[in-house]
Image (cartoon, rainbow, N blue to C red; front, side, top):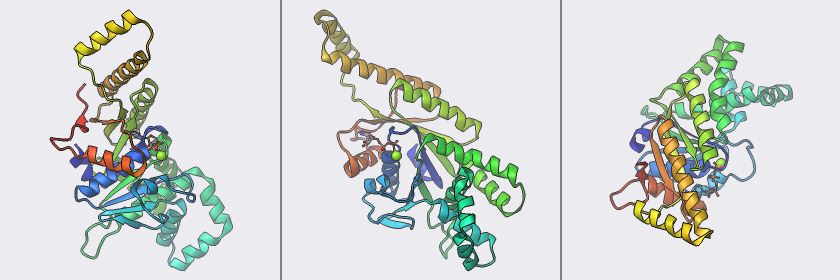
Length: 314
Ligand SMILES: Nc1ncnc2c1ncn2[C@@H]1O[C@H](COP(=O)(O)OP(=O)(O)O)[C@@H](O)[C@H]1O
Ligand SMILES: [Mg+2]
C-alpha cells in the first residue's frame, strides 16, 4: 500500500489537531526517502515565523521559506502564502522586478493577506510551483511532496477554494492556474490525502465526517492511519479470564486499562468498516521527537521480522 503512495506527487496529511499529523508527515517523508525516493517535506503552517515543529522532527536546521536539504533525498520547506503570491505575480507580470515592486505595495499586500482564500491560493500556488520545477534533463526536482496540513479544515479549504475563486474570476491567468491546481488536487494519480485518527470514539467520528467531506469535494482519500493504537497483550481466552477476575475482585486500576483497550478496538473496527479506504494501524510508542519519527518511519517499512507494522486486521 505504501509503495502506491510513493508514486504520487503530493501526500496531504490531514486530521484533527493532536492526532499525530506532524509526526506522521515527518515519518512518511523519512520512510519514503529511505525507500529511495526523493522527498520534499512541506509544512503548511499558520504562521510563517517562529519555530517549526515539523523541522525539529526530522532534524532540519535553519528550516525556513527556502528549500533546505535535511539528509540525502530529503528536503524541507515551509510553504508561505507570500512566496506563492510572488511566484504568481512573477508569472502574471512581464518582469520580475515588477512583481517585487507590486509586492512592496502595502495596499496589494494587505489585499492578498486579508482574504483567507487568497492566502490559501498563495500556499497552494507555492506548492504547485515547487512541484512543477524540473531539472535540465526534464525530471522533476521534487517528484514527491509530503505536506503537513495544520488542520482538517485546511485540506477542505484548499479544495473548495478553487470553486470560490473560479466563481469570482472564471477566465484569464488566475482562472487557468486555479483550475490546474484543482485538477492536480483531485487527481488520484498525483494526490493522496492521508487521513489520520486516534482510536477513540470522538476522533473516529470526526475522521468519518472529514472522509465524507473529502468525497464531496472529490479529493482522493487514499489511506487512513489509525495512530497510537495501544498494544493489546491479551488473547480472547486470557481476556475472558481477566474479566472474570475483575468481576470477582471489584474495582481495580487494570479495569480502566482494559476498558481503554476495548474502546480502542471498537473504534478501530468502526473506522475500518466505514472509511472506504485502506487503513494502516500504528502503535503507541514510548518515544518523542526525532526518535519517534525514526521509529514510526521504521514501522512504515514492513519487514517479516517487524512486528510493529501491520495492516489492521480487525
Ligand atoms: N505513534 C505515536 N506514539 C506515541 N506518541 C505519539 C505517536 N504519534 C504522535 N505522538 C505524540 O502525539 C502528540 C501530537 O502529535 P502531533 O504530530 O504534534 O499531532 P498534530 O500535528 O496532529 O497536532 C505529540 O506529542 C507526539 O509526540
Ligand atoms: Mg501539527
